[in-house]
Length: 256
Image (cartoon, rainbow, N blue to C red):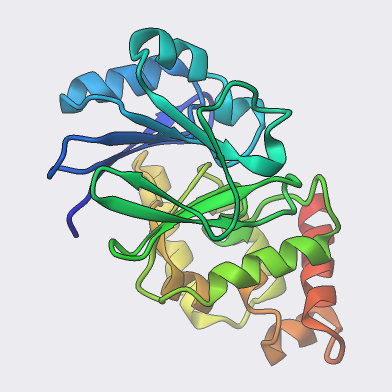
């Protein structure tokens, strides 16, 4: 991998992520939850901020943009075209099929409506990296705030077919709570049980559970396992469309 990545905490449970190209010195902040921690991370790493790549319009993902721009006036802000009215002042608005370059690192834009209607994620195939925002979490997915759960299902399935070695960076540290829910609907999953032992150890030590890998999510994340017979039996949904199984999972998670 050519890219360097620095992950750090922001707000209560958000993650900030810096993507750095050592060949050119370009550095992108994936979203901007708040300015101070991003600026501190840049200073710690000795990197110059050149880009902010926004996934969606929620305040805990764009709240630090103005402070970062005040410190780095030449920073380029890229945001989803479908959210242009809710993320004003970006330098570029992008949609699916387009790409963004951070130095020599190319990131492909994938539209993933559901959590918000305009949500996008950034996939760097050459680096096997996915910056998933609030669409896909370790052992979970985002709430479907602005579209039906079946729409979010289609978005998540776009990510499920990426290479299994893809490393996934998510917007929040929700893994332990997601894992408890996952065990409640997929109790016979031995890979999930083993994973939860490690997650509980990491959180007890104050460590992050991210990044995760797509291969690990495919084996343990119930929202990516809607065709699994054991999970369907647990839900009492042996038959039916996978999108409906996903919607049932999302509804149960909302109530958990």
